[in-house]
Every structure is written in C-alpha cells, then in structure tokens.
Length: 295
Image (spheres, rainbow, N blue to C red):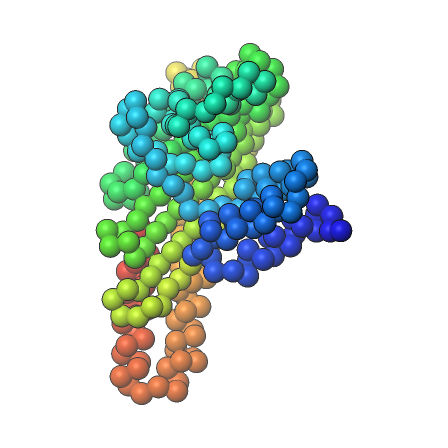
C-alpha cells in the first residue's frame, strides 16, 4: 500500500509528464481516481493538497451583485462556490454549515482588499494594454479574532489575459505573505507562477505551453509618520514586488521558450531543409514571438 507521500509525489510526477495544455482536466482526473480508491480522510486530504499545490488556468466568473467579472481559483473557493472580491459574496451561495462557515477576511483586511483590487486593476490596465481581468484576495494569518494589519496577512493577486483570436493565453498567480518583523519592518514573501499557452493557428499546429514559477523576498521598512498610512505602504510594496516578479518571469519566458526554440530551428531543423523550409520556420517563430508580445 503506497503511503500518502508516495501518492502525492507520483501524482505530481504524472502531471509533469502530461500535456500542460490539459493541466486542469488531468488534475481533475487524478483527483477522481484518488476519491474512487481512497474513501477515508487521507484521500480527501490528498485531493485538497493537490488542488492547492497545482496551478491551473484561471476561470472567469461574474459577480451577480456588481455585474463585474472576477477570477476564480482555489484561493477564493469554498466547496463549489467562489467568493467575489467586489461584493464579498460567494457564488453560488454555499449551503449553510454552522460548524464550518465559509471563510471571509477580517473587517480591516477587507478594506485593504477593496483598495488592492482597485489598485491592481489600474496596474492591469497599464501593463496589459487595457485588456484582461484582475482579482485580489486576502486572508488573515494570525489566530486572533481581532486581527489588524500589524499582525500580518496573506493573499493572492490574479491576472488573466487572452488574445482576441484565442491563440495566446496568459495567467499570472502571485501568492504572497506579509510577516511583521518589528513595529516598522515587514517581510514580503512572493511566489509567482505564470501559465502560458501560445498556439500558431495560422501556419501550423505548433504550440507552446507550460508553467514557470519563481520566488522573491523583500524586507521593507515602513514609516507611517509621513502621512502615508499602513494600507498604502503595503499596497506600494506589494505592487513593486509583483511588478518586479512579472518583469523577471517575462524575461525568463523569452529565454526558456523562444531562445531555445530558435536554437532548435536554426541548428537542428533548418540544417536539413531547403530555403523554403527556412523561410517557413522564420515566419513561425515570428508569429509566436508576436503572440507573447500581445500578452
């Protein structure tokens, strides 16, 4: 009988070997197999750990109260319901459970969440050419019921953009934690994952898909005596860190995907083809690079 760790590692290894374009379906199939074979709490724990460990393309939902679109993932999920950052309500409405009500941020954190959504919506508009959708979700990390921003918190910044023809898809997931180190110093820990899917539908079935994950840490001193309050300080520091992380990830994607693709085409594929093949491969590479530039 395989142990919990062996099943978890085997599931991750299997997902790494399967087509990344079908990561959501593959993850769902693996979770179904686990639930059909492990009927105890261990199987449920394994499924929850897999869902929280594997990044899948973000889903777009609509808030019924505000009419705005928002992004759904495991970080704003409770069962089959997802919390809207605009109305702070779950859709569809979850079944009443007095023993375990759906999670909500504390009142002070909810106020910061509202401002964070407005701020990163501006960030998305500037850096994604006015297209795409962004959502920010925050949650308390301290066990005290009366949590304040001084106690630290965690959250996630989600950004999704697709090209008009559906040939390019970009999902960035920024999970962060803010940890107080002193009354005026905070540690910001950020884990960024970008899910990229590019398809060259005009010339061939050539496509590029995959996920890249990187981490950043930064210790920042906060001075609230200069007229800038704690909320604003946190938003500035988180925005700067997300901006830096996305810049680094974008450059890495250029190196990992396109420089490697260029080497393969130049050194391996084109050396055995004629001049017509060379022009075709040049055009294919150019179309793929344009796909990344539009995201």
